[in-house]
Length: 470
View 1 (spheres, one colour):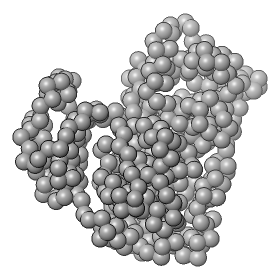
View 2 (cartoon, helix red, strand yellow):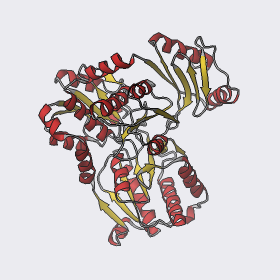
View 3 (spheres, helix red, strand yellow):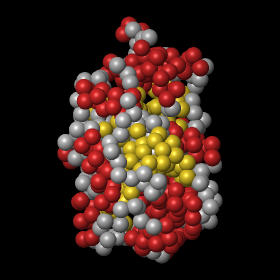
View 4 (cartoon, helix red, strand yellow):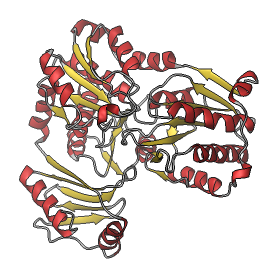
């Protein structure tokens, strides 16, 4: 019943996300920690989803019964805070109750390992194996209040140390001098306190929407996309803001509206920040992206004599490659990124602070800076499409693409094809297309990037017809 995807274990509330399964996962973690001899502590946090706080407490009751102290963050908090705490306090594991950007009917749990990293595939397979061996009668619990009295459960709220770390990493004085106007959309999630604290410290004028607690996320996906951020676009334009900032439900992903009211694709955010770190801050080093993220990063890296590394989808691969190559930034087209010297995972709060610093330090609007990049590196266009499918349809598409390795008849010369994660075709004109199944949602995703917009649409249409997805 416990199966991890690229972003932790996620399931529909009441179907597979149940008290029994939450405590099953907690017991599996206890068994794993005992086998590894790392019994000191575990930190657990939660977001604003339905049953998140209760789920954290249910898990803690199992850890307490097994003699492992559970440090519970006693207010809803960003996922990166839990990662930071795990890293700073050198804990063997951390957990976060969240389903990130999934629909409101989902909840889940992310597991972090030593150093505050996302649990990699070897770790999650191990956890699943421990869970599969556990019988219901093996799961013991201790009453929550009793566990608090015995200090096997300790409630903490380490927000300040997380925020102080971010404040020390950005140029607050430069932001103060710029007098910026910033619109915020926490998307009913957990980032409001963190972002407001940072921006008020930097003397920004702040305009906030969607800040109340709503477990239904206003009836929309808590994911910062062009479709979900129309309200923020209006807010930026109505108030003459320099930037609009949004984060997903657990604040590890970011969405941005520029000064003209245009939604910046996560690809553009990543390109902007890499360009800023290298050109304006003088950092040196490569960049890491997953294979569904823009190759504009490759162009920027080449311009500055650096390299861009490609990895499978899943932030654990990005953080691992960053460590291996000493990269200065890494990210993905879904809005997650991290920067060298911070945590080894996605952080929408830190990314937001860095973007505000970029505007202040360069003295340029976001639209101007991206215009500079396109002038120096050329333009590139991406088409993205998502498709739902039945179990039978998934099996048929998997057989066609991954087993028989068939492709539609493509009008551009192919350089090579990769099956590292899905099926990705690289064209000799620098373009590419990938078809892969999401690891967090029941979707087939097609991404295509080409020198011209009509070419990207043409290729995507060919895949749609080939896979009979209409």
